[in-house]
Length: 53
Length: 264
Image (tube, each protein chain N blue to C red):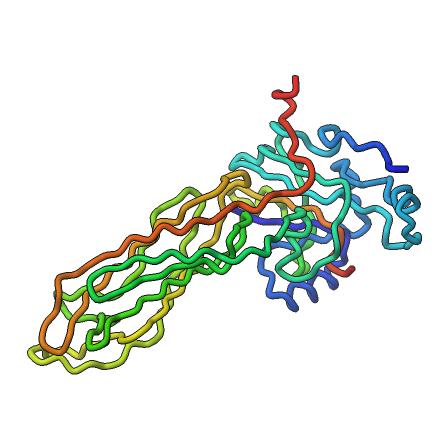
């Protein structure tokens, strides 16, 4: 039996909102502040499963 | 445009992945999925879904985000979000982003555009009939020069026009440097400078990156080939050829979400 579809509007930050601050390590181990690193540029933030599998 | 890709992989896994695939954009490590959970992007129904689809439980199948992408403007405000119910088949390397976004690849062949000018025929094509934002597509321009004639390459003498490719400006289109094969040294009576020229068929390649916001739609790349054709005795006036190369935006599969305001 298929599951009911999600309401993706209700999931995660919404359109029109400032994307929340995110600070995570990148592949070099350096701590990256997303908005600081954007430095006024537009950005794509991609969420994906895993680079491993 | 900045690009960030976030997963629950460790720095070590991301480091190895980036090294193996030549990735230079930021792969961010959200080990433990705390940031993704804070953002409300964790799919807590993975196990439930897997039960439905008959996939065996796996320790790595927890704390996974919904696959998707946010587009942020210069102020960091979300202008688009695209999320998908489930991951498609796995992928690695440069296809990762496309897979994460659920891009459909099309099997059809690129279209070749041809035009003729004095002593020269030019053909142009892209190595992909479609583009996806942030994808680099290679434009090839093939210039066929009539026997007995040549066109100048670089370096070129004063007053002569070398073979070159110009690309019309398009929003978000980043044009890389054109690469040509090396021209050969050419004797040219009456000129003291050394002249370098191409004969026969020569192919130039220009990398194009489509960095505009998704939804740009189908595009036509305006290509101008400038050249000056000469034989051993004389040169014709400089010429240019125009080629219009179509490219389609690859469709995103899944939900394209209406904005909350539009819904109200």
